[in-house]
Amino acid sequence: MGLVERTPTQDELLVHETQSEAPAEGEWVKVALLDDDSDPLSPARGVAVGVLLGGIIWGAILWALS
Image (cartoon, rainbow, N blue to C red; front, side, top):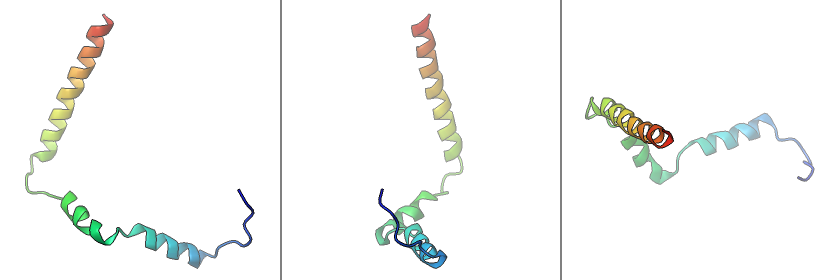
């Protein structure tokens, strides 16, 4: 790493931070679609599928070890 000639000021750091936090212009649609609450049972269904798959995987691991 090279030497830094000068230390950036707090204002310069805040400008870079706010610019990098905003999604690109085409990504607004993706962000809006992530919060889809049309099916209230969707989270429960996801948890149930995860528990089922995890149980199958752990069962296979324990079966292989025995």
